[in-house]
Image 1 (tube, helix red, strand yellow):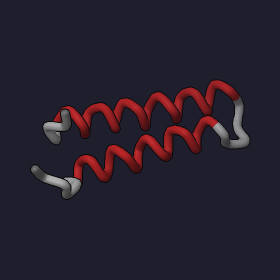
Image 2 (cartoon, helix red, strand yellow; image 1 turned 30 degrees about the vertical axis):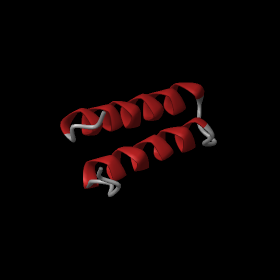
Image 3 (tube, one colour; image 1 turned 90 degrees about the vertical axis):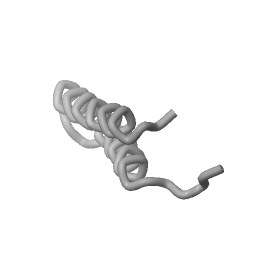
Image 4 (cartoon, one colour; image 1 turned 120 degrees about the horizontal axis):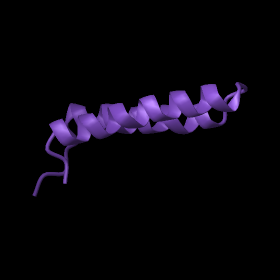
Length: 53
């Protein structure tokens, strides 16, 4: 059983945190949604590439 996080999981978690931060930023709704979607797509791609379950 592996308990260590691999770098892609760490980066994916960081992108998820940035996505949530983007939603709470002091910007227009369109800008916040765009930043959120960009970070979430990167997080999903990293998890898929990293072999996350």
